Image 1: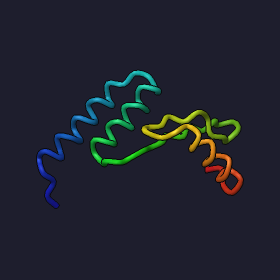
Image 2: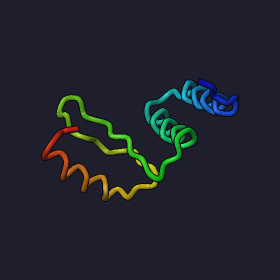
Image 3: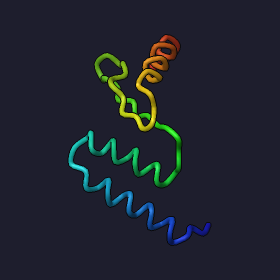
Length: 82
């Protein structure tokens, strides 16, 4: 399988940026940004989960209305926690 050098450079740049993160919130925001550079998407959400209650906490989202997250959580958590 051939992977163009330009693609390899994009992956390398993303890993370099992520490796420099020293806080979880920075890691999450940079991961979402770097994923968008590698795999273009319209909107995305990171759902942190409270370990003790198994409930979603405040999400980090990119180009998504916060109300949509609440609608998603309110509907789907009835059927499946994740």
